Amino acid sequence: MSTAIRPSACPGLLRIVQALDGGICRIKLDGGLLSAAQADAVAEAAERFAGGAIEATNRGNLQIRGIGVQSAALIEHLLAAGLGPRNAAADDVRNLMLSPAAGIDRQMQVDTRPLARQILDLLQSHPRFHELSAKFAVQLDGGEALAMLEHPHDLWLSACERDAETLLAFGLAGCPTEPALGAVALEHGVALVAAVLELFLERAQPQQTRMRHLLDEMPLPALLQQLSARVPVRPIDDWRRASAAPTLHLGIQRQNSVGLHYVGAAPVLGRLDPPQLRGAARLARQYGDGTLRCTAWQSLLLPNVTTAHAADVRQGLADLGLQTDPDAALSRLIACTGSLGCGKGLADTKGDARRLATLLPQALDVHLSGCPRSCAAAHRAAVTLLAVGPGRYDLYFRDATQPGFGALHAHYLTIEAAAALLAARSRSPLDA
Image (cartoon, rainbow, N blue to C red; front, side, top):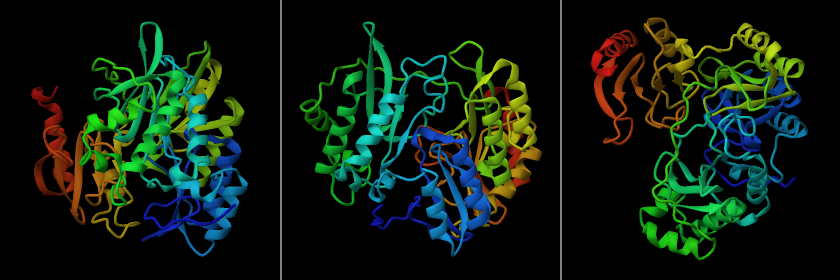
């Protein structure tokens, strides 16, 4: 494998990026899929070549933290497990997010996995697309009930029905819950992705690394006109994706085949240790199909578990210290690495999140961010606590009329004060 890797601030499998607690290696998974053997390999790599910290990311990937002088051995170990790109230059661009329940979701309109394989092959096999930013991302949604619909993507595609035909609605620089720009027939899905990426690379200036940057200067109608000249785009009459269920990534959930379930569990605040990942792999071998799926909620799914064994798997995951109850406070909190691992973090966000969980009277969706970069949450959470100093936070509530985290509600709060305000708000009839 060629090892010519371009500079970037984003970690990859082949590019270790330094943080306060050591190097970070990000393992991009095809559709979030991880075999039990690969899970064991990640656990071993974290133990042997790093500090033992494994993180589930908000794009359904994994990363290893605390890497020291053995970075080359770690990379070699992960490549041997089949966790790398087809070639070094393709590692950055494998940013295709699916529902973790692709192919097994009871609500899905189409199994997106065959199309996803074609898109990933396109991204890896065409050198021109290797010029894309490591942050340039595509989402493919088959209409599943379990789908992350709040993460903005440079291009999103979502299955929809029109006149008994399955189409792919699409949009640019946004989310599937926003009005679609058009649609293509299912068989033109790969051609649409190729056309969008080619147009972007042709029209964008070097400093315009994301689709939103291009659209700031190029009128959308002009871009759509050029796109329609390359692929047959159909009007879609202001279609937008219906909202998805918020907590189907946890606990026991029925699949689309009678008698089969997936079981979801989340590591506390996205952080796994090697025994937990090995334990989940062992349960997947014993009771499932030997695979795990990583989710955009920083959690794991074990698919294809029979009804008879579903409760055993859930208990086994809970015994490992993973969260399986969506009503547990820690299962609803998001926190970045914070000041213990990141030089930009102004507070120990993970420690403060654990403290917050003990103070809230009920589970609430709260994001604790150590700095304005918002690394732990790609979407805007209902509540954000933005660190402004050790143990001190500004409190924001999501507001679609305001940019960034939303409306600033209070400044320089302790965790105890923030918990009191959130508890009072949750009891208010105005917020019921």
